[in-house]
Length: 353
Image 1 (cartoon, rainbow, N blue to C red):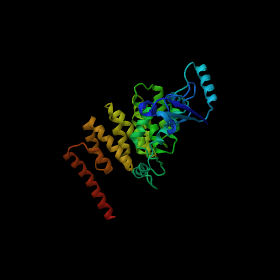
Image 2: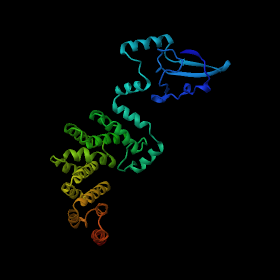
Image 3: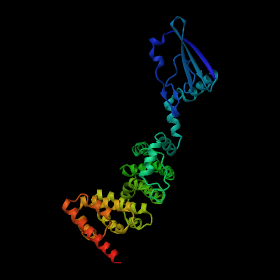
Image 4: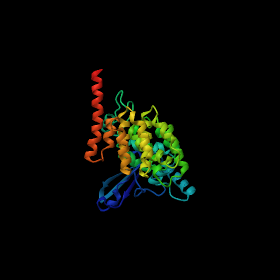
């Protein structure tokens, strides 16, 4: 540790620039963005310093620079060597941070970015909202308490992340990290600049990671543009396989993926996969299927009405309610009455037995 003491021939009160606020560096350290006034040329100013000021006689000010990590002589030697080799000044604080980032894996930097937003209060809310209790659909999922808006905003900064690093994020036990991975995949899937080869890699990554895409929000993030968009101009047999899967997340993927087709005016797969899922016993499938039937009905109202004519009486009540949300009051009452009549008949049959 070396102390450099300089006598400054000006009053602090007359030169406010002397006390300009240093920029915040990485890991919370504060570093000056330029060499402190009075420090001899050549001293490495991106080495941590402490600068202190003391009023002395005659209205003069003494500045003390405490330089950590290098002797003054060593600092000057290193600085000169850097200048000779690069033909420019040593890295400033900002340039050094950018250089460090270029050699740090993007997945690691993404996780570190999330850590800055963690909140115990938000974590508790998530654990209740996503049903993480024993026997619930989200059992065992881990949260650190980062709001999804912050996750998505951070994901936007990492949209160029390679699939190999996205896969590392998907392997994380932390829900927000996996949500970030799927948000990056979604953003790449949405971009018209993404080549077909990358879409195929993302599609394959999603399908082999369905055990990690293991909550309804994660499915809804990735399925439309990673699965649906990729399959739009290709055979879609895989969706029928997913619709018959034992995994609730794969079944939800099947119906949610058709949302991309609906946006393009193609509703056939939505109605056909919904027919497969009519007998599903999971509430998350009922909600997703009913919701996308409703959206398909906006494109083809008559097709929705025909579907309801055939299945309203027997389809799960939640699925029916979601599907009829945008119908007029008389139509909603009609289809609910069909369901109620069926339920009443089932009750009578149970009582007789």
